[in-house]
Amino acid sequence: MVKDAALKTAKIPQLLNPAEMPEEELRWCSVTLNEVLERAGRLEASVFGIEGKHAREVLGRCKWRQSVIAGEKGLSTAYHRPRFKRIWIDKPGIPIFQPSQIAEIYPQASGYLSSRSNTNIDSLKVRKGQILITCSGTIGVTSLVGDTLDGQVFSHDLIRLTCKEPKDTGYLYAFLRTKIGNALIRTSEYGAVVSHIEPEHLESVPIPDPSPIVKKQIHDLVIRSFELRDESNALLDEAERLLYEALKLPPLVNLGSCSPSKEAGLRNYTVHVSQLAGRLDASYHVPVIGVILRRLKKEATVITSIGDPRISKRVTLPGRFARVYVKEGQGVPFFGGKQIYELDPANKKYLSLAKHGSRVEKDLKLSPNMTLITRSGTIGKVALVPDHWANWIINEHVIRVEPSNSDIAGYLYVFLATEYGCELISRFTYGSVVDEIDDQHIAQVPVPLLKDNSVQIEINRLALEANAKRTQAYHAEQAAIRITNEKVIHANGE
Image (cartoon, rainbow, N blue to C red):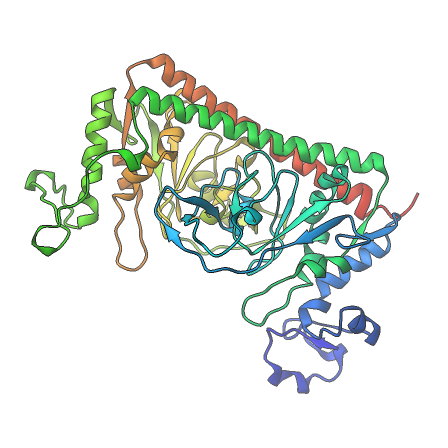
């Protein structure tokens, strides 16, 4: 019998009979010696966890013959890169992404590496058609490399899978996105403090090998989902290009001289009393803000703010509340600001409508084309609510901006998502330990309206079309996962 490592072992000797073990006290399962030997003699409880055993039992009843995910007899080859010491530099440099970003629809570089870093940079690049799996810390986050990520540099904590038959790629991705597939990956982890898996662990993870017809059906849906994401990102790139062109904005790094003075041996700058706005924190008055505002005033027809009725109906920040969670299917999906960039937010929970129904209806639920802005911890992450998030709930660490109408919703999002918009949002940051902003601050964030209204209309259209494609991508992926569950994993015979 293998005990859950998370529990206090001091209680275990008192519970000798499994039948007497209270469920809330101890999670346990029995394993045979053969099972230990099959897993290379590993004795960690997680390897024999109840969830993993259940997943293998389900696959044992599947009508399709079994293969393995990787290895000589598997569907794919798998590898990761060795650790290396990174030399960080300011932009421009070699953009690098973190493994946790693979779940994002359009990730942006987390930093920039020097070419002098002692590693093979080219080997860190991911290639179109590869399946990526996080293998350290949070195990089993999975994505597929499309045009957006093709050729981008990721750190070493990713397992890269390449299917031996390209037509198997979509199917393998969909399987890994199911609960059964993800459970099998996570039960291979090791590590007492930080969890890890290795490529060779995937050589013992089973996967059904269905008929070519079923595989193709799943593969085509997955590939189409990622094509739609790429198309969405391309539309947003074009919208941002039009915005920068209309406002004659250079990249922020090239904006010009706006650095604080270093006279008197320290960084400093002067602010007139009339410009204080009740704020005495230096970060609110950084010189770059003045440069940005002067540039916007020069090229925009008018500078208004998010709180202007022409821009938004309301800006809301729900207060904290005690949450009552229920099982999936029994409540409304609930997620946090950390997942704001994801198509299908990971680790969703479900809130009880019986307990929170009135508040959900009043100020918690999301509506399509609403702009979301993170307000705590990481400030200024911006997302546009797609149709498939309608009536879902995001936590109180995210501010909601309800646009005045659909004619401004997309344009507002595009501006706030730029590096200029991020600067104008983050200037309001306060807090000595945890950074914060609130809804009143967001209402004051400047928004330029363009002199050429037709360009503004086109930017808005591109953003809304991009958002619609993301919903289409979500439904295509969900269809692939549903078919994988119904026609493969839970297909128990004719």
